[in-house]
Length: 81
Image (tube, rainbow, N blue to C red; front, side, top):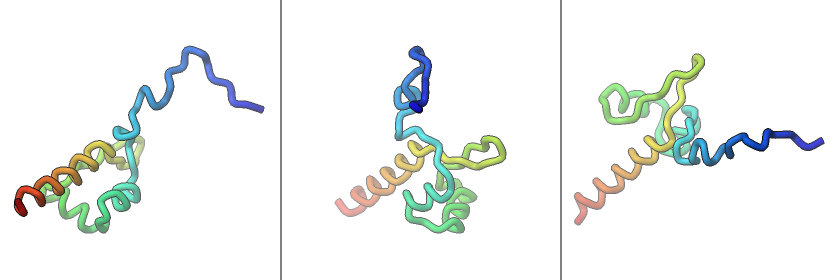
């Protein structure tokens, strides 16, 4: 049987764009290609986005992780050029 949704329910993608999802540590590690230890060390140094505590879990803004990666790419280009 098909799942029913109210006709006035907002589309999930319209409410929360993909780039603003909350992701787990595993998602952060996969996205940034860093170890858990390195991520926590960078956070302690103030050089990495901090998680959002929700319901006893620690989740990161995918948008902030993507922005952190983009900043690293931009810094690389700035030092090379």
